[in-house]
Amino acid sequence: MTRAVMFQGTGSDVGKTVLVAGFCRLAANRGLSVRPFKPQNMSNNAAVADDGGEIGRAQWLQALACRVPASVHMNPVLLKPQSETGSQVVVQGRVVGHARGRDYQKLKPELMAAVMDSFARVGAGADLVLVEGAGSPAEINLRAGDIANMGFATRARVPVVLVGDIDRGGVIASVVGTHTILPADDRAMIAGYLINKFRGDVSLFDDGISAIAGFTGWPCLGVVPWLKAAARLPAEDSVALERLVRGEARALKVAVPVLSRIANFDDFDPLKTEPEVELVFVRPGEPLPADAGLVILPGSKSTIADLAFFRSQGWDRDLEAHRRRGGMIIGICGGLQMLGRSVRDPLGIEGGDTEAEGLGFLDIDTEMAPEKTVRNIKARSAVHDVALSGYEIHLGVSRGPDALRPMTLIDGRPDGAVSADGLVSGTYLHGLFDSDAYRARLLAGFGLNGGATDFRGDVDAALDEIASELDRLVGFERIMAMAAPV
Image (cartoon, rainbow, N blue to C red; front, side, top):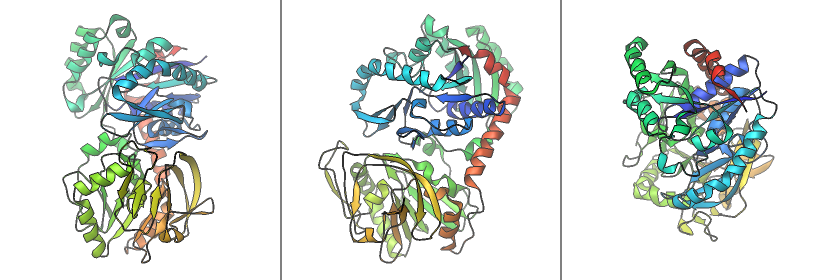
């Protein structure tokens, strides 16, 4: 019999993804067949599922925690923001179109069938399905046609654990306020709540638990402190970038400009593990640091729009100065496209301007095409001759003289481009820096030692640490007691 429980938050970014991943690993360690599920996700951090197609990186991580292949059915609806008002809509791994916010609200009821179909597929043969909500069920203005939170929970009859983030303040009001604002049928789905990201003496919150019980009658399932191991896991979306604090100066400063539609920025997580590397995400309004040895242009959901954004920040001039100083530049996916001479989008696929002048650091031109490349791959560094693995998610083809010097070989074919002097390069491969051997060769070019950390092994170890903490602080049996047959 398959059982399921859903984790919803009092707001966005309360830590649901990490909690679900931790409980997934805990269940897997107990010998259960466990699967993650998120009906709707909004993120430009996407992964390629093992059965093909796109899902949110969070569900890819949760599948890793379950020790099972990732499936498109674990995240049947993925929204990838392309503008301030609209997103690309991916259903069961495939792009079905683009929708503005108000139009999407009308589309949601039609997507419930795909959500329920995927939920049934994920649950088939599993002992337990751990479901993650999106945003907050208290957004009652979005309740009609909802597929992400209570709309799904009531349809699938899955009980809910509410998660509140005490670190941001006002957690008692957010939990009690959620109870107050929910309609009776939705409120009845909540079986209990968790307080997340607590710092200090947990007993200081005893009166808070009593107060919440007095207002809501809900049981507290546990108070979870700030889980340090969570910092070693990939971040779900760009909200995490807003909280990053500059670290201490180290031998090599690597700068990554935060584009307006930055995508798959977890590409750079392995660099954070290197003791001699200072990874700096440069926020809008800040210059690219003059003392950076390496600047990496990240992926983008809207390359042409982000070219304009890049120039509006003055980063084009900063990058030119960096290049004159002999600094190294790497572009990943959209970053590769931006480094070329031009980007054309004759069919208007990105939904904005159809042509833009590139930054001109690579002698290539890119043209967007309607066929989207989405696949997991094995590759090899053409520059350093080491094995690589990762994935491609991109529109467009890049051609030109510098493409005759590929940065990588994907399934034996040339990919990307390298400048004549070797200081500027780019690739469509996501996951480049996951390779410990590649990081070692890259850092050796700066006279540094690197690659000693087993990055992927460390992510796996972090999941085990989080699972152990959750078992100690909450108890797996309490979560299983909340789960219901589906």
